[in-house]
Image (cartoon, rainbow, N blue to C red; front, side):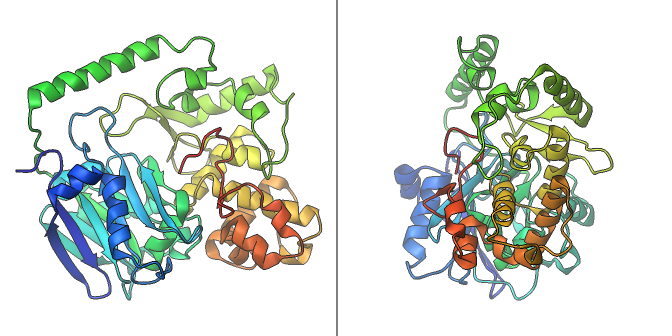
Length: 443
């Protein structure tokens, strides 16, 4: 018997339509532990260096962390690894939510996709029963809408769905994979999923997960919970609230945004607004958040409520991820109501909440400086907020200038030329957009 992990991976050859349940080597767990380490080992061993991101030989690996599905507090992460279209290097992104624990309960540690499907499909994992199903009726649907439609189709409201939106289908280089209130957004891994013609991976599991010494394990878990409670009641003194506690629930609770708005860059990460925050703005933003935020939510087996359900006027309710509240607001020099509204569209489209706002701000800066002209933006609204909605739609559809911008600032600047490279400054390894308003790298 294997403990914590299941000891089995699910290998799916999309080109041939083959599905295989493969027993894993326990020595790999001893050497590389869970999700990220074993994912890297598999990519290193099985993907030759000459393989490009959109080659059939590239792998897309979904992996549950080693303790996912156990009582270990906060252990719910799904690690998604592949060769990135943005960096052309091995990349990973992780998401919280409930998908990884569900995969473990279905009896698998990883789902490994290789090849390309000739048609748009979704993968349905229901314990031992695994099917590749037609997804033609889901083409063009939003990521959140796709999850709801599949749950209705399967009559499985508790099934966990990791899906792409239109951005992934059209191989936008910063496309995300959305799952409930979380997403794997970095590295353009959603574009690889779209290239493989996989709209979603759906999981329902009802099996047990074994722990070697349950009593000792539960004692450790309870110690962690006690510490979390103590830390929340005793924030680190002398530190701004958003960094004084554990996790990032403050992102959805704190209404004093002076630290964010005055210490991080606006627009294309070039402008600081040191005197922006005042009592009038604080009151307005507090009312906006209290009106649109319906409740705080958390991931599987985690007491930290880092996300929130947001209901913008006239729009469907969606679940906002931590640290994306102000990315669109600050990129567009706008207000919180705009940011919460456009984030709903971006979640359905399935794009990275760090890269997408910067790419749009980058495009408008090129327009302001004459590198791009009005001819590149036919029909674009005159107001700044309208411009962002217009650009987002063109990017995810790869229409007009959006087809260039969909490759991210680095590759777009190289294609545009005329000095555009000078405006594509805010990148990691000169390829991927840096998180707009974080003081740390968050791949």
